[in-house]
Image (cartoon, rainbow, N blue to C red; front, side, top):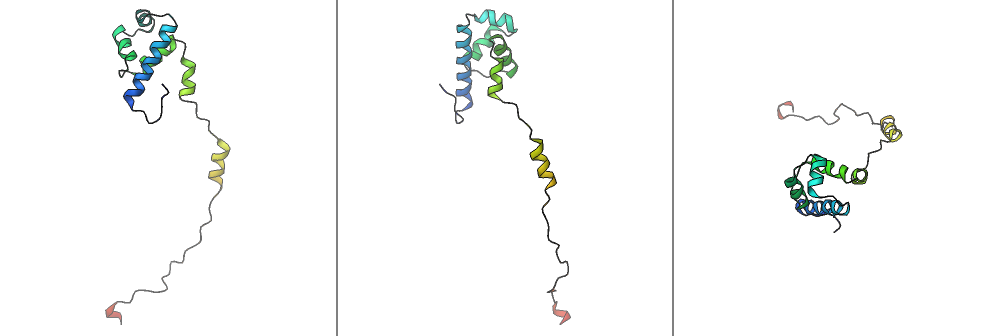
Length: 113
């Protein structure tokens, strides 16, 4: 299943868990072996593979053991700062017309008539 932006959190967690399980099985690693390599309990790995919520550090530890860390660059690419563009924004100042602070039509109060 492809993860879509409109998917709710639970369906995304289930898909991530399924993908982690598939990668673990493809790498011929048991849950117990993954637990020993990551320091995450077997029950937590079972929960993750079943789509339950977990700490992001658990996901990172599992991805590292399954050799998927480079995929995080695709998940969240590094933001490239465009200094030239930012510099242009700072140096281009918009001209502002001077306002006339004298009111040409002053309010005349009844007692001033």
